[in-house]
Amino acid sequence: MADEAVSRRRRVPLPAVVLFVLAGLSLVPALICFAGEGARLHPALSDPMAGLAFLVSAIALAGSGAFPLVFARLARRDGGE
Image (cartoon, rainbow, N blue to C red):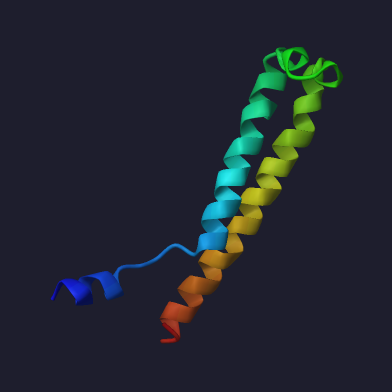
């Protein structure tokens, strides 16, 4: 009975997890740059708007991570899994 519960449990695809983790990691330097503390990381990040590149990257990575989730949901709905 425990095996049935594990097999029925929805699994999050590994690529989605990796992309969401990378998005979170990209968000950290973005927040640091927006707070004005980017110069502590690198002199090129001293401008607060330097965090915009990290923010855009975080959004793009999170959006890319949504695709495997949607595909897995569609596969479950069609009975593929």
